[in-house]
Amino acid sequence: MNAAALQSFLAMGGYAAYVWPAYGVFFIVLLIDWLAPQFRRRRLLRELRARMARQNARKERTSQASAAST
Image (cartoon, rainbow, N blue to C red; front, side, top):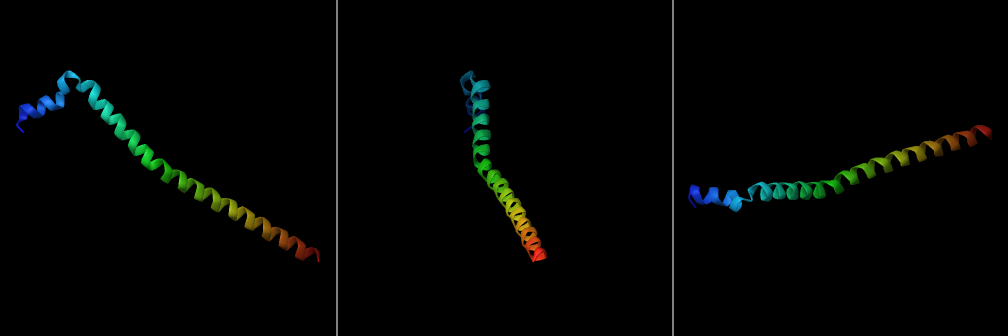
């Protein structure tokens, strides 16, 4: 493949201004679609850990209060 053929391919028959941004948007959306579940999983795990910590703290306070009243 020579330089003229490569330049012609990259020019996309005069539609390069439309084609290459479309490829760019496609790959950005594909990347976001791949990363979003990972970020969502991290956030959910962080929220669950915090919820469990609050529940454990509440149980400890309840057990301490009941032990102090007896």
